[in-house]
Length: 111
Image (cartoon, rainbow, N blue to C red; front, top):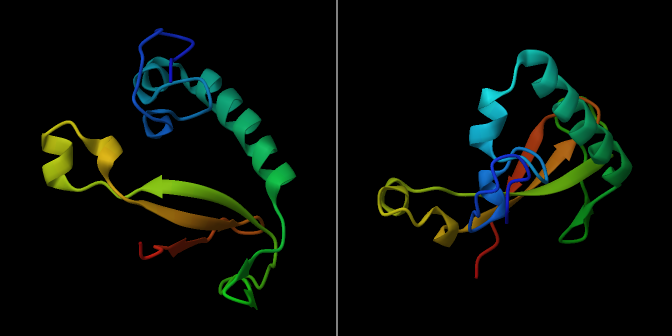
């Protein structure tokens, strides 16, 4: 993936804060620019929020009781792989983020 700001090529989406801006470029932005990008990213989350079923059970937020979640994947970094520059080779977890309060449920599927 290529950052639209610095034009660097990264091995995966896990180096990005948004679909097109890498973490390094994001950190160089002023607070107003950061908030604008995050607001745009948040608007995408709302469109993706839906009821989710895991192994036949509907998810329900343990904090606020909401049943609408948006899905994302998170890279499970390990110190050894990070040291070797192989973050992209780590396992992924599925996250379901409550659209009501932001509570995150983690699921690591066995392969």
